[in-house]
Image 1 (spheres, rainbow, N blue to C red):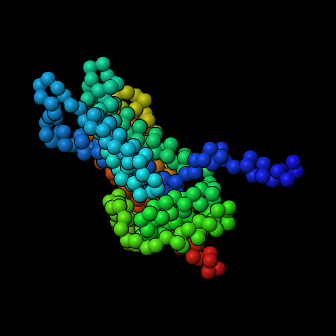
Image 2 (image 1 turned 90 degrees about the horizontal axis):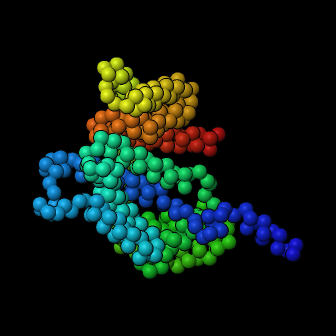
Image 3 (image 1 turned 180 degrees about the vertical axis):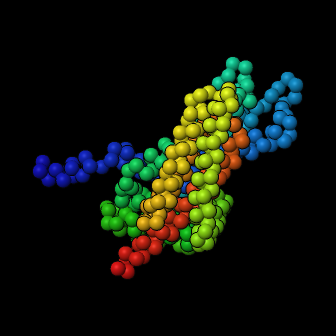
Length: 352
């Protein structure tokens, strides 16, 4: 009985998700980001295309084959891909196809929350935006609220090996698998997995990953931009400017007697002001601690992106898309600058 106590204690300390056999995919945040970005881009592209073509109806006079049906078909195709193949290779494509399908599906939400099937229902943009943001917050909670267990890193390495044992390793796949194994440390099974990785032959053939190519290009561009020292400051200035425009716009609507709901105007006013305050705190802090200052800038962008934009979409429908694009660009630049600053701090600490 006493011999079993350490084993029982280790089992009790294991997170319930791991005990149920549900380790998190180390590349899960990237796949979820692909899904959500594909959803948003599909909604905007669909609205733009329909507006440019006069909102045609596929099916003639007696039928209307709505694009929600094509969305359901693509989501089903995404599920088929993800459920049919073992290993990580099909996940980027499944996330992309599923995101496009969900974008076509959720774009027609106005028809299903109104009694007269109104595609142009005014709060539609806010509903879609809140849905995408909510899914993003759920994804963040799944992957960021709990530290990654070393056994999850080992599971990630084994998952990479699944594709390698049948098709060989590309240099990038081998690098990912070895990085996961290094994160796993000396947990049970690590030695056997290391031997398995060494036995896998090199093979340069792999499934195309257009999302990965785009993401890598964006990262390179952002890191190139932040080398010009004025660019991060310009991004912060744009953030403060757009937040000020948000606040002044909300005040103007309220002052001119706009028929928008009062809580929407108040929400845009309060959250826009909060974003400005956070950015100003960052401007003060960045003089003493650059990393801390940019963390405050990041908080300002996130308030605008996650909360203020919801109210703006409710006020001005699809015109708020421009503000969303600005927030995403500023968030990318601030994130790239934070990564550079943290790397420099780590290098200074290592040299010291």
